[in-house]
Image (tube, rainbow, N blue to C red; front, side, top):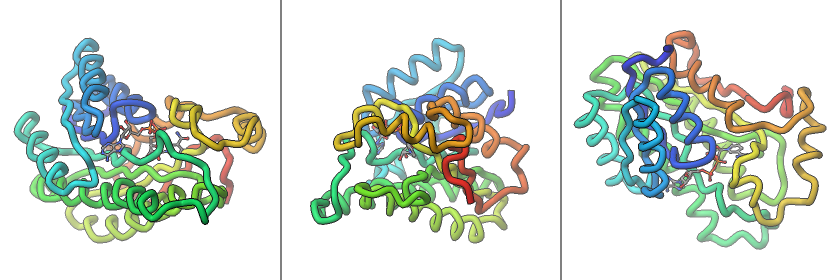
Length: 253
Ligand SMILES: NC(=O)c1ccc[n+]([C@@H]2O[C@H](COP(=O)([O-])OP(=O)(O)OC[C@H]3O[C@@H](n4cnc5c(N)ncnc54)[C@H](O)[C@@H]3O)[C@@H](O)[C@H]2O)c1
């Protein structure tokens, strides 16, 4: 077990890739907090973890709310005594619509930034005092290959995910002296329900993207969890401020 007795908060852990992080972190010995806007889904994952013999806590959290993120951190410490790991995975992704720049509304743009960027910052802000007290911590921010590849029709989403890289680099340098590592994972187009149901996606896109990857297949949620475990574990102790691209060789730079 690579995360024995660690306490990990996973935002947006109620479905998709976040759920996979939560289940795998439990198998690696971590106690897992699922901080989710969708409490029903978070409770389902909590139940799955308890049935696996692990410990979990579902907390209703809107990551764009400072109050919610503060409560998230407080409740985690009340229940488990500390915070070792934060995965900033929550994002406006399910229900996202491909649309030209001119059709994106100011509300869509602002909500994307409020959740995807402000939310990641607020969660970091909430956990930092506890990590500083411990003199250690691991923060893993989830970016996306969209901005690397310059994917059209998703400007409101892709731009937030480029912001995640800036956030990662600046935060890493600021908190490194406290024993806290901040890194990002950059997934490719992954076959979650959110991707499979995305409105306006060109027909055959999964086959096209599979053909563009070096490994020649589509990415699944399970493909991402090993890197998250690595970045949360002692094996990555001297890595910070980095983005690890996990996409089967779609982005190559
Ligand atoms: N699936 C992909 O192809 C892909 C590719 C690159 C990056 N990503 C990123 O990986 C992460 C997970 O992707 P996914 O496919 O599982 O997406 P998803 O939409 O299925 O999961 C996102 C989760 O975040 C939660 N959430 C949304 N708004 C929230 C808020 N304000 N507060 C708290 N929770 C909130 C949702 O309820 C959901 O459970 C996202 O950050 C996404 O941007 C996904």
